[in-house]
Length: 263
Image: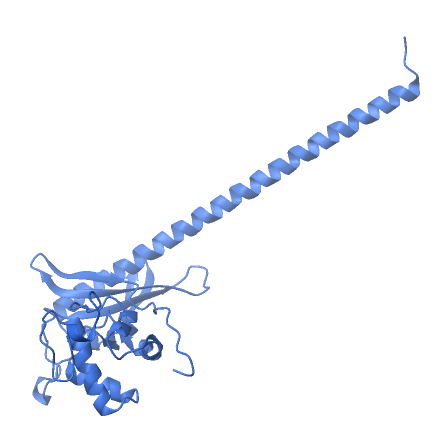
C-alpha cells in the first residue's frame, strides 16, 4: 500500500529536522570540547610560563647571593643589579623586608627608638621593650621593666623567637590593633643591620658570615603586562659546603593586619 504523497513529504521533513537536530547537537558538543581543549592549553601555557618565571627568578636570586658571599657586604650597597637569565634581564635588589625592624633581631636600643617614633611615651616604651625581649628570649630572668611567667597564663609566654608580626600582640601590654598599625615597618624576615664603621673602613670588604639579607628579583613578563617577582631571605656562612642558605621565600608579602583609624 502506497502512502499518500502528503504523508511521504511529512515523513521526509521530519527526518530532515531530526538529522539537522543531531548535527546541531554534535556541533555543540564539538564546540564545547574545543573550548575545553583551548582552556586546558591556555592553562598549561600559563603554568609553563609561571614555572619558567619561577626558575628564572630563583636563578637570579642564587647568583646574587653567591656574588654577595664572594664580594662581601659592600655588594649589598651596590644593589640593584641586572642579571641575564636566558637572555632576559632580571633585576635583583634588596627587598623591602631587609630594612624593616626585625622583631627577633632588634636589640634594646632599636626597639626603644622604634616605639618612641610611633608616639609611645618613653616610660611605656622601656616597659614594652623589656617585655618584648623577655617574651622572645629563652631564659626565665625578667628584665628591669619586663616580666616573665608572672605576667601570663600558662602557655602564653613564648620564650622563643616570634613566628609572625601578629604574634607580637601576645606580649603583655600590647593589643593587636596597635601592632597592626606598626606592621608596615616590622618583619620577621629582616636583614642584618649595617655595622658602624669609621671613615677609614668605608669601602672595605666586610665578611658576610652570619649575615642575613633579604633579596627581591623582578622581571618583565613576556607579554609586557606587569612583572614577575620573587623575594627570599638568605643566611650567609650557614655551612662550610655552601656559602648561604635560603631561610624563607615570599618575605615581602605583608601580613593581613589592618590598622583602624581609632587605633
